[in-house]
Length: 79
Image 1 (tube, one colour):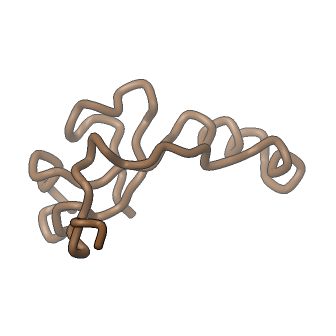
Image 2: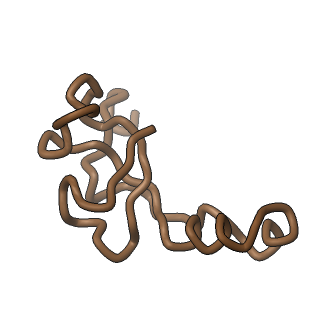
C-alpha cells in the first residue's frame, strides 16, 4: 500500500494546481478569472478552526490566497 491508510495529507504537502486555465477565460467574468487565478487549494489546519470554521474537520479542503498561503486564518476560505 501507499502507507497513507486513507489519512489526510498535511497542509504543506497538498498538491498545488491552477484553479483556472486560459481555456476558462471566455467562460467566466474577468473578475472571477483574476480572483481564482490568485487562489490555490489548501486544507484546514487546527489554527483555522475559528468562527464559522469551528465545526469543520482538520484537513477539510478549501482555497487560499497564493500570496498568504502559510498564514492560518488569513486569506483562507473553506466553503
